[in-house]
Length: 167
Image 1 (cartoon, rainbow, N blue to C red):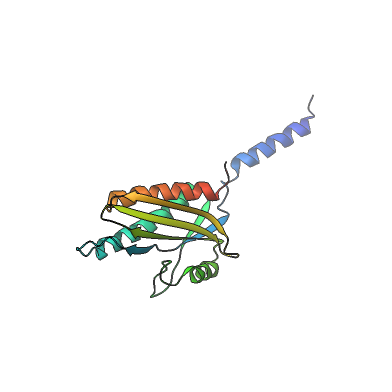
Image 2 (tube, helix red, strand yellow):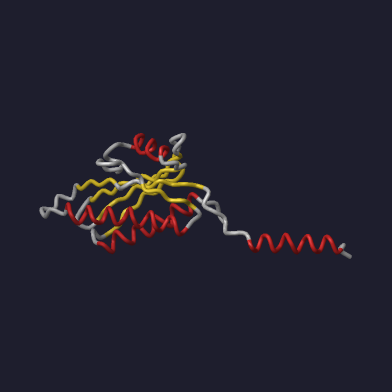
């Protein structure tokens, strides 16, 4: 038979655990803008739509990674210059992420190979050591808003799964 004080203590512990707030995000990840290259040879200038898709993709990654996992997401700020991996480079982005208090930094680049096929490389680096924590390479079809959105959804799920331990 359990002592009455032990039962009361167990009840208090149970109530305290039930009333405790959800676990706060413990790891900060900075998400840089995406780099972009195009060797498709298309005649039409698609600079504006690509710029918009890159911005939408990065914004969606920041939102989705932040809501799908226990990660605190930071957007890198680089003043007048871009924070894309092909502008200042990985070392500079790691430094910017460190300055903003992030433990990890996500860098990515899209390459448009043809009018229909694009490739995407995403890497998550430990800011302190530069060690690659997670990496995904994928190709996706359709240089359309829908094609980019689906690729972004996939990447967000994959990165969260790769970084966070199974729950």
